[in-house]
Image 1 (cartoon, rainbow, N blue to C red):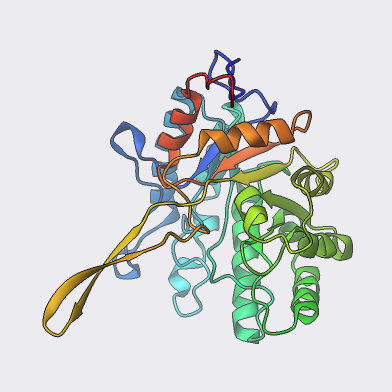
Image 2: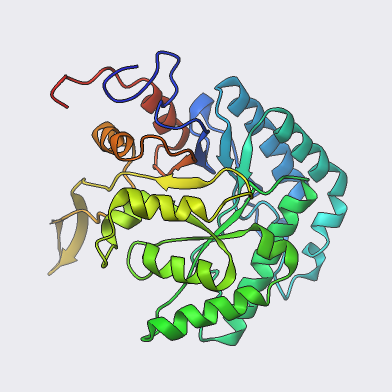
Length: 326
């Protein structure tokens, strides 16, 4: 094992679980993750599953045992004005089961993470109803694949709307109204601005929802100054008896942003500081070293959130030994 905590076999040493990435595959020339055609062209879950089957082969070849699928793998599945797409799960029942069986055979953990537009605690009832419909549909996809409790649908609390207590209360109420399959699958993540680990812990205590710890979000949003290890351990404990916990790990963007603007008929470039809430292209190995030291003895799977996707994961395995001073 080198100074950053990596074994010679290329596995991170600080946990006994899996290491994964989200959606896009950039290696091997790139692989499509889902059917992206517009509704007029008749996109379908069957096309997405064919793409995903190739991705499973790529993951297995590279010994990557964790992957977040696109939340759009079943295009327009819940769109209220496009009923022709509503039966995709039934139409692909055999393919979904076969895909899930292959993922289990290869020991590849799968998950979904709906977009930021899925807001269960919205003050707009129509938006909240749509969010519930989306969460239930994505849970149904994982059920149709025959996956265990570790296959989860990750979501955020949602909006603050000027009243933290009311916002948390609305999420708890709407979560309680989900179907049993969705309540079994949906897990809750701390975010970078509004709802910290302390907030989602309140929701776990009220509803039993499992918690996903996000390292970068905790660094950015921790008003109670909860130390890293206790915050992480609190989230891990919510998974007892319901599969191996998973966390999210990413490094903040530090690159300067160049924006070209027009003024008075001429162009000029404005140099802007980075948004630290954004994900970096690759993972900072020195942050990994810090995280390793802080989390020794805890077990969980790690979803890397980096813009270089699988390339960031593969690079992290190759990090050379750091100088002794680190």
